[in-house]
Length: 161
Image (cartoon, rainbow, N blue to C red; front, side, top):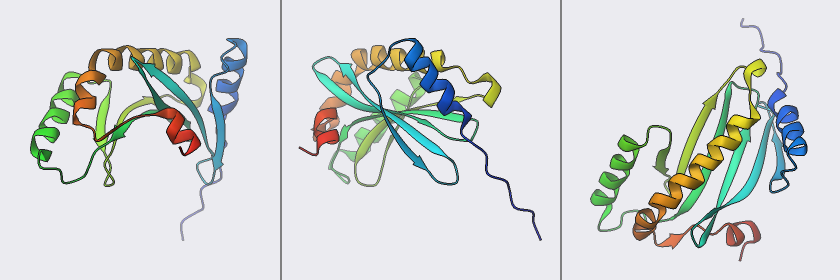
């Protein structure tokens, strides 16, 4: 019989909270999901040109911190799907730091995974990652949004409007 794995606390949460307070960064909404992974999600809106895109910093008790940005929605099975997936493959090939993926419902996301042991988690790296994402999307979102049926809209997504 296998031994049960003891519950591990999400130590990144406290470090990230302290960093946000120290740097006077008040643009995140913290949402505790908890569960077995002790997940805590920090939600914000990223300015990208005339758009504000919903982004999340996802921390848990693993070695990973994920930054995820919802870019918008696309109709699954659209007539130009083959060309769209080729466009995504091209983005993924040219931008190793960002990975683009679409879920079954048509939601398009840019993901970044930051691995770090508990004692090496650096909240400033998360901030730098968000800055790089804003810069990158400032350069490329105009090309991405052409493929979407509904552009990302943080206010609509957060408020259900």
